Length: 279
Ligand SMILES: Cc1ncc(C[n+]2csc(CCOP(=O)(O)OP(=O)(O)O)c2C)c(N)n1
Image (cartoon, rainbow, N blue to C red; front, side, top):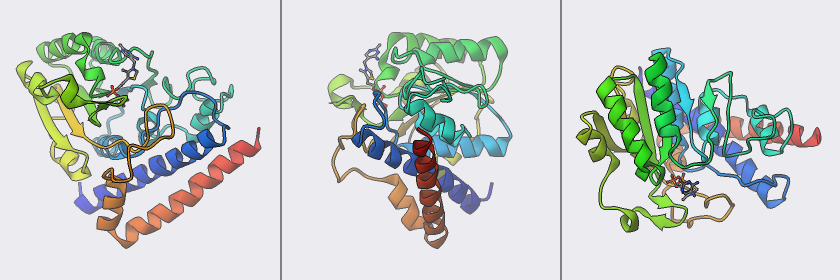
């Protein structure tokens, strides 16, 4: 895939995710959204890059996300109106207003909702992939990856050589506890010890593209270092010095990205306004 095309396509997806989340923050603050909400701003280049790669491969994977999954749903083509409605608790939401932010499911894009038990999507995704041999992606956080049942699933995936990608969105935090307090090991090494491909990389789209050669050919684990902008389940911020991949990519890509950014911001603001007026 042409590198510039890939970067711009990924940037456009990330842009939809970012402006969607900015509206989520506004609507949490003004209490239009009344449920616990997990915001993925800052981490959107992971799902955006992998979704762009899957489109290029013409593969529609099954997706097992965790609670912080708005960007996954949007990047893989989930209906944004249904997500707005879900967050507003409406029956027209993607999970009929019953799943909320943390359990987003979609038959259209084959995304399975999370049950709230951190890391449970790991072995469930492995089981689905093993039973069907359908290309599957499990997304989880760096804390979820520490759960024992995640490890059992990874061992099985490696032994059975199934078309599974496990993506650890490593924002270094479990709620507010840093990784260095919790453990002295890396998930990429754990994957290697299970004799599967294991990589430790950044959320720069090109880094992700470079590690995509084995996607769905054999099981692999990507530990992707990233940054969360907003606090767990709320609208507090981790600090204004947090590295922001979105701003970095916008600067790097220049005029074309600025155009995309403006167009998408406008589109998303209108979408939210229209949905809110339907109340
Ligand atoms: C088995 C289990 N333990 C604890 C919790 C409470 N809990 C919910 S989210 C969370 C932190 C999740 O961190 P991580 O997996 O890194 O994802 P992030 O929120 O950073 O995206 C915790 C401890 C839970 N839901 N399930």
